[in-house]
Structures are given as C-alpha cells and as structure tokens.
Length: 331
Image 1: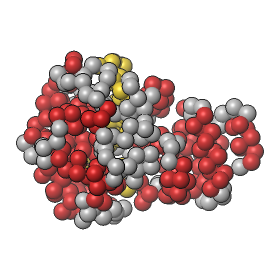
Image 2: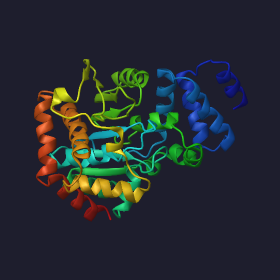
Image 3: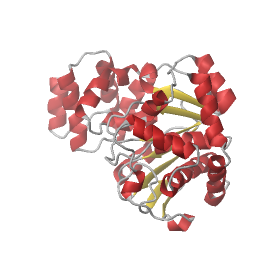
C-alpha cells in the first residue's frame, strides 16, 4: 500500500486492473484502517477517473453475492450521497412511488454515511429486516413490486470499509460505487450526482454497460432533482437542462427539503409523503424524481405523462399500499 499511496500522492492515476486488485485487497483486510482512509482521501483531493471507477466496480461485482431478479427488469433509484445537503430520503420515497405506479423496483441502499438517514435507516425505522434470501426477495417483488437490498449483505468490501467511512463522515469514492454495484444489475437506473464532472463520469461509465439510465444533477449541488434550481438530465442519447417552472412546479428553498436531525425525524417525513400529508415541496420533489425514473423505463412517454403517473401513485394511495405490503412481507 505504501507504493500505491506514493504513486497517488504524485498525482498519478491507477489502471483499471490495478484499481480492481486494490479493492479486492481492501475487502480481504490486507490494509489497515489508516491506509484505507489515506487512499480514500486521495479521491477527495482529485476526481476519480473512468478507469479507476470501472476497476473498483469490477472488484465489487466479482465479489458480490449475486441475486437474479432479471425477469422483473427492475429499476434502481439512488443518489451518490455526499452533497452535504441533508435532504430527506427522496430516492427511497421515489422507489415506493414508482413501485406503486406499477413498475418493478430493486432498491440497493445502506445506512447514512454523510447524512442523518440513509435508505437502510428508514427501512429499519419501519421494522424491516434485511435479508439476502432470494426467495424472500423474489416474493417481495411479486407481491409489491419492490425488493430492498441492504448493501453490506451483498458487498463484503462495503462492509469492510463501513467503520472507516463512518469515521471520516465525508463523501468517498464508495459513495460513487454504490449505484454501480447493485447485485441484481438492474435493467434501468436513475442516478443522482452532486456535481457535473460526476454526471459526465457516470454517463461514460454507464455507456459501457447494458443499463438504460438517466443521470440527474441539480445545478446548485444536489444529488437529486431538488426543484431548488435548474437541473441537468443525461441519458445515453442526450443531455438537457430543465427548470422547475418548465415542468409546472414551483421553485423551493433548501430548508424545504431538510431531513431532520435524527433517523426518526427522517422517517416521519417519509411517512408524511407516503400518506400524502407532506408539504408541497416534499411531495413534488418525490413526484419529479419518480417521473424521471418512470421515463427511463418508458421513454416513449412524455415527461408530463410520467409526472401524472407518479402523482397518481402518491395521491391515490397506491404508494402507501405498496409500503404497507412491503413492511408486512419484510418485517
């Protein structure tokens, strides 16, 4: 590791195979926590390259516990985290909204590393028990269109670095890897990123895969569509900048999206959204993210049609019914 760190400190880049081997060694406990923290810090000081990201991803996918749910052709909706905004669990709420609209979802998530509450925190607040049992996951997909994969159960390397990530409490390249290593390898993905270089990086990376995708970024630094500013959406075919107003939404303040101070606070906001009793800002941010996820699956529909589908899922109670069934099946 000493030689690797010297190389990185001299502003050199890792090759794809080199990055793959390093992450395999991390998972096998060959480096101590200080060395791993030093490695992570390098990628806070400069952008990760496509080769490095793909090499790290290759290692995680090779070591993952694979789960075959391909016959459902599901979507994953996820943000990289690390935007420092402490928003409520927008992508998790969007997953239930999209599932309620009739589209299969496999959410790959973890505890919050840089925010108060990650997807796994919200799931636990609702009594959900994490599992890697494929029969149970398949049953959840069949009965409510949604399965939840707690990342450490499927990615040993993520579990190995969890204490270091929690100790640093800043965004790391593991935040960047999480969306790329859903063990199901979903057919579709909506990914939120916190800056434009990452939007380009993920777009290049996804273009090497068979995944149909959209990468989104709000230009004021959110790793999701926040409706606080203009936002960019990139797919394999185009990039486009939208304004909230162009889609019929108001423009909101940063405080409107706050996730609270505890996982309990975040869970209450999540429940208000599912019960259709949330604020206009909370509700509409979930609707717009859900709509762009639906648009990845059904690109022949207009974005306005996708917004209508997401809105109907929340307002009709279908998203709430999906959540209740999910909790029943997974508690």
